[in-house]
Image 1: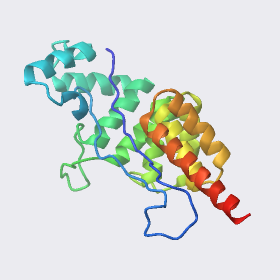
Image 2: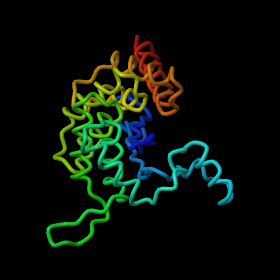
Image 3: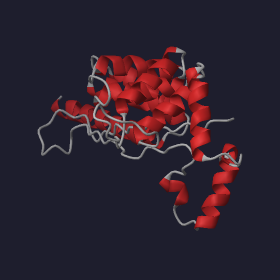
Length: 229
């Protein structure tokens, strides 16, 4: 069964990197997306403007595994079985389900949790250890935000790097921004540009905007230096 893995995304957007004092509009900004698309669910951007019937037709085209006559419960049990057997793709998908709340978890008192980032982190870790780029990215996000694990930007950087080196464009963008703003690592505009360009070359719109902001900031700084000469 082909698993459609849910992707947790974080957009680390910048505005300007100049050193001048301001109201804050010149400073790098970070915005966290709150949508985590679960297995079997279309992202909101794809559902926009479509009727329920059209959504169902699109869902079957891009998620053929859903047309298998299995109940959601059986599909989940199969996924968990694959994950427990060591399938990294299944482990990453299962982690996404626990993160989004599509997989049922209970606390110590037996109360159903809305979401379970701790269990999600465990499954992401198992898949990341096998070199799964998506899981490395997902686990990196949890370390960056401190959900399910103790916040550790150095570990987030390491995981984003491993994922980015495998071509994950979201990891490349995030890695570029971390170098740009010096989050969890020494600020390095050269490396920031390198990773943002890699993501931009693959069409990542956030990286494209980040590069534009970086170049504009550098041009502004150069102009300011030239003006003082």
